[in-house]
View 1 (cartoon, rainbow, N blue to C red):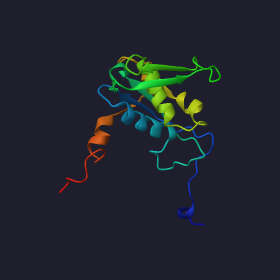
View 2: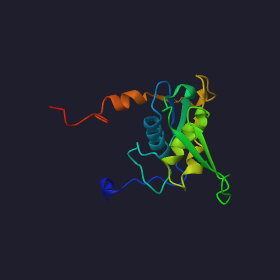
View 3: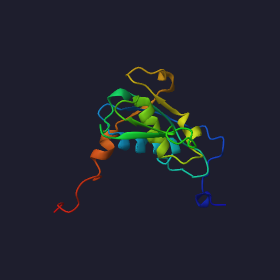
View 4: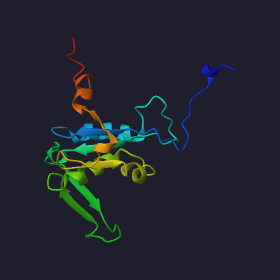
Length: 158
């Protein structure tokens, strides 16, 4: 029997998870959240399979120095049946950076993945974290988007 014709599918109790550490200093919120969401789902791994959780854990440090648009607003809905009291509008710059980052990452995950995958995200406002024993791998998010042509105007490329 030839083993090259067999597809590797990880089992439900797949334990080969990595820890990644990302420095949020001078990073855009949306670009950072897309990288974190793909790491949480495990889409960067060659043996990714949608129905099996092979994602990794992510540590975010220096969350208070993330770049957000000053004009953006959070629309928070509580008690949707109460007219006049249900909607709260807050500026993103006034809210906590942990809340802002968590909300952006949750928006990029499906409803069934939110609770399970968000348990693997650790957000710290400064450079200190409690996860040195996990030997986290450092990722530089600015290098990911610097090498690609994301966001560049394609009309004047000649």
